[in-house]
Amino acid sequence: MPSATPRLLLLDSASLYFRAFYGVPARAEAPSGIPTNAVAGFVDMIATLVGRYRPTHVAACWDDDWRPQWRVDAIPTYKAHRVAEDPAEGEEVPDELGPQVPVIAQCLEVLGVPKVGAAHYEADDVIGTLAHHYRGVMPVDVVTGDRDLFQLVDDASATRVIYTARGGVRDPDVVDQGYLRTKYDVPTGDAYADMAVLRGDTSDGLPGVAGIGEKTAARLIAAHGSLEGIRAAIASGDPSIRGAQRARLEAGSDYLDAAPRVVAVARDVPVTDVDLTIGPELPDPAGMSRLALDHAIAGPLGRAAAALYPQAD
Image (cartoon, rainbow, N blue to C red):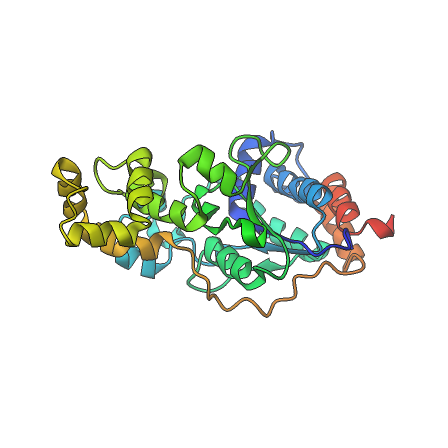
């Protein structure tokens, strides 16, 4: 195994393969005729991440349902702008990326990296469940370009986010509670989730409370402890929340009833019985060779295999 010290690496797969698709230039056509820039980039990301963080356990977390109906029922605008013109096709995905996603899944299989998803749940929920399950058992690194997962940060259990939005996997921001305090003026992952509800997120179709941005949300949380505390203060007539700010929060009451369930990642998805241990040896060398030839990705696959199974070199 890459390390004797237990550590879990959770990959937000879609976040990473979208980043690879847009960040890696088109490659020469492979024998399969399928574009391979996202495949090659994603597999190289695995090589870089495993080589740097030395996990003993790893999961490629998958969107079995990228827009669960239970979230849409709570807030109908949730991810609505990302639905394809034909809703039956689901999420709008670039034409050259769509055929690469099944190949990415095949690469994970031959490399022995579990692809973990669950019906009616997003990858974020799978990540939240696995992070919660392993909290206190071993350190957990969540790799994503999505700020939503900052809510999982917890210094006491060494749960952090390797945030790739700016520097990619080679120069990520390592998000711990110190980062949250410095960047957002909130002390914990739970407080970040409360702030995210108040602020909203246009990229996910979450409107937030009109007129309440990050700084105001952070001040309210500091004063009242949590979103629940803020709402209790409003209900009790606390004079510290007054004027336009009170009016805005009262006007957003229906949204605030629904949004916490949408923003919070699930912690109870039925995925915890999957064995995430990196095995002692590459499980399917012949399959890897076939994929390497069919898609002209011998280099990335070789680098990922060497990172995952260094004793085989």
